[in-house]
Length: 341
Image 1: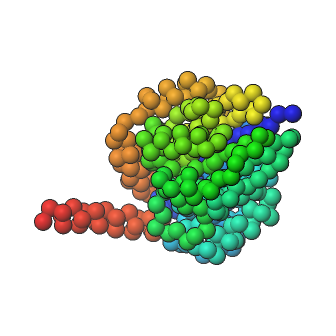
Image 2: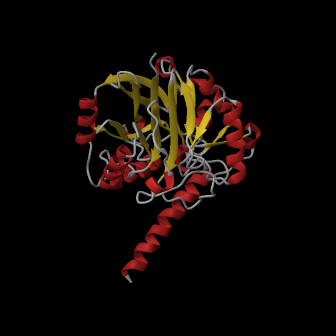
Image 3: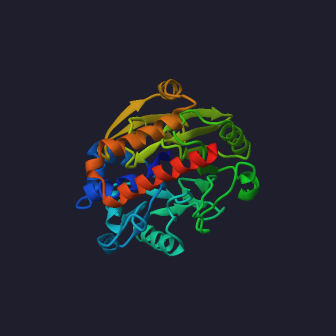
């Protein structure tokens, strides 16, 4: 019997600094299940296993009655987990990223307990895989981040491009074993993978990994097959409040039947934070999409668009956001002046 595996990218059910008090929590707090369209739920529920990158932690609902821009960003109410109850699949959250545990060990501990309570498996806490036995197969699913994290508090598996293979400490692969790694890597806003990603993907393939599922850039990057390893360099955002461009509101849904090993791909499209559409695509069309949208200065362009969105929607901004925005502008201006002296 076959196993259908599905993966999506970044799932951030809170609000980032720029969208504090005007983002996902503000819009969907009365009904979090409406963040996904019926078609999106249907698509995800066709899978036996769903893997996603959980890019926000959780807190009790009453925490948000007194939240501020320091303790209330990249954090979702416990009620947000209602989304997952409507997805009829085994759900696996990768927590190895730079936002899930950014509020410290206590916050991460609460989040782990809540996910467990909701029946959501977790990977990425350390270098040991989540192990699932299904239909004669043993699936081993790792989670890891390779991104520098100034708030790192030891609650997830953090490695580097150079050390990952060593840090994984892999055993000999069994004949019925399927190896999957959910990996936080790459450069933000670039639609083509970098050389480090390509080199490490080949190392992971040679180490016996069957599927490499990437995230962090917030935009989609290509799908390639290295030897027998399918590699999604980046899924882009699935649920995120980065509404300043179409690129950051478009994600990849990667589906694969482990028997025939042929991917079925869909684009997901957000509008006003809602995952509104899912549209079928092909590996060729996907890679053409990434190539056409690549520019080496894209990160600079995207950050400009991010700031422009703040200016255009200035009338919506919470006072705390305005203060932080102005402070950052003044700091950058001061740094430039000091650099000229």
